[in-house]
Image (cartoon, rainbow, N blue to C red; front, side, top):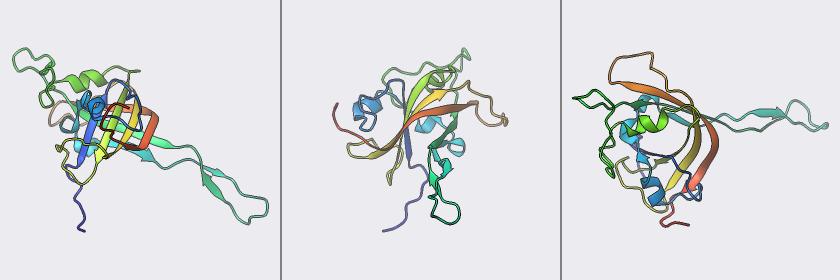
Amino acid sequence: MPRTLADAKKKVFILSTKPADPEKPTIAELEGGLEASCRIVSSTYNVGPQASETVDEKAICQPGNVQVYSLDNYTAEFDAFRYFDEVTGLPEEGTPDSEEDIGDQLFQMLKTKGATVFLYEREIGLESRAPIAEGQPVEGYELLLDNPQKPQDQGGFLKRHITGLVQNAWLNAEVAGVTP
């Protein structure tokens, strides 16, 4: 089997409501959030587990030092593109129930310090635009958001740097087809 290029393979959903079973979010729950894959700067997307903490935990009879893994660590940060109305200059509202024309809804969902959102990422051998399907693996993260930051590099498109503290993670989740 050939190796798969990683380019354009991540599909990211951001939900304002926690799925009924975070280990098995339904297609409807994921699609009820915002499909954000085309709204996030690829080079700044960094969401996932980091190296776990370690603890010295050797038995008296063991020579040398023995360490074991302890607390999990995660990171969650990315830049979100902003979208503005060309006439008024105000944030675009987007079209209700449109997967493509969501306007500035992603930033509006992420702009309040202390808000909680649920980010689900699918990374498999399909393009990011391929629809989500039952049985596909996803990783889920409950994020406590901080204030959006202005990127140091103000070139390119208008965007804001989003950071979140991971409150819960579901690393081996799977998409369910129907409501559990």
